[in-house]
Amino acid sequence: MLKLESVASFVSVVETGSIAGAARRLGISKSVVSERLSELEKVLSTQLIRRTTRKLSPTQDGHHFMDAPSKYYAT
Image 1 (cartoon, helix red, strand yellow):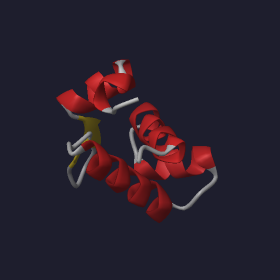
Image 2 (spheres, rainbow, N blue to C red):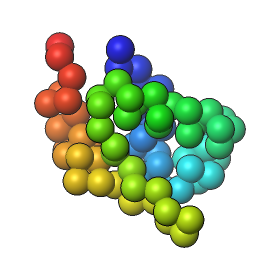
Image 3 (cartoon, rainbow, N blue to C red):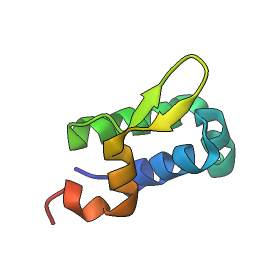
Image 4 (tube, rainbow, N blue to C red):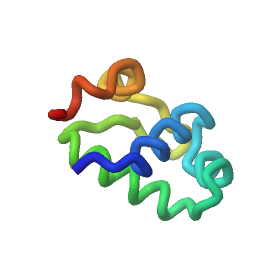
């Protein structure tokens, strides 16, 4: 099931460019942001964020999800 908190965490990660920045913005821990992001990717069966040791960036699916999230889940 798609959870609003997970979507909000994803959007914050994309907008701030980091899990730490998203955590600060949302007032939660980095581990919670990471868990929510992983949960969202699992529910959608796709990777939304490309994670490297130096940066995070949205995948093609991540960009599409930001533009039109309703295409990724049944209503």
